[in-house]
Image (cartoon, rainbow, N blue to C red; front, side, top):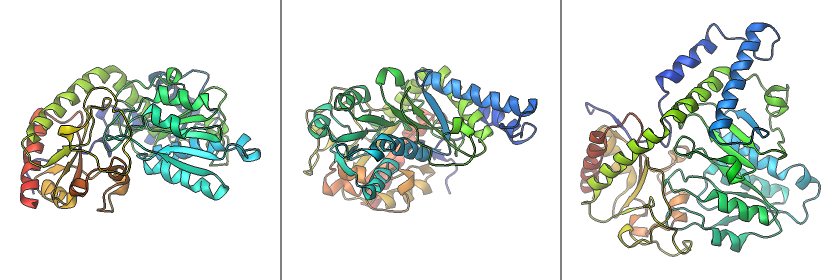
Length: 407
């Protein structure tokens, strides 16, 4: 085993910040009261939940008149948003609005949730993405129509780190009379979401990507946008999500967001520095391509089913978040590289953690049309607060060794 562990999989999950843990612990011990009870101790727990709700709403730039519902995960938040968008008015009279649009590079929480609606007579179409996993506005315009009831496009791709222009995409959806949902789980803590300015009807977020606890997420719905409960029982969460609230998790979520609010610029600058060191470190590795977009302008067209081009020839796309670097190496099996890296103390991944039980290339790799020779050698490195430039440099060195030995 390696003497030092370099954790480079923060896009999968992050460690809980010590301050977050400190805030959570009282709700697991002395402040254990059920927030629905009427005595003062319980009311104090309820007040802590509402304080966390206000912190999160403020950070995402939401309209105060909107609703923020705490859930058990980002996935539940996605499901709550999508099912809400197609329920009610569409369930009663949706003969002319039976189509749902999702990007081809969405997280499986979106893809599988949308696919489940096919059984209820909805049509689900996947909108192609560009070389880096971005939905270009002109591409969405080709797919949108009056029969579309919902467009769901992620704010940040969890595998490539590419940032979508959600404000423009939302505008296109609204002009066609469709609701717009954005999975912002990977975007939270990287840049202000500005929910009100973006205009999204629904936004899904989660705590464990920003040094908060697992098992707690949230779904924001803009003012006047319907929410249809999936979990029924009591009147918790404003009658939209039954079940005794996870007070410790919610308090931790609020604390994690509060910390991010204060150090957002510092975190982004730190991650950008790590990314630069890592990219410089892997620059000499032959036959690799970078799947995360460089800074620049959007590419001119979406990737069809034809091959993509190596990074040295790629048309620059829009910006990526600083902490995620996705690469593909020719003539390499990614799982072999990951085993060598883990033996050297470098913990990375092939992509989304929810797909870690398979060694096949992810649907995102397919969607961005990575060439066949590179496809199976796709790896994701995602750095965080606790990493140093020395970590990034060493990770690059070990990657070069792993690729050489695997080849």
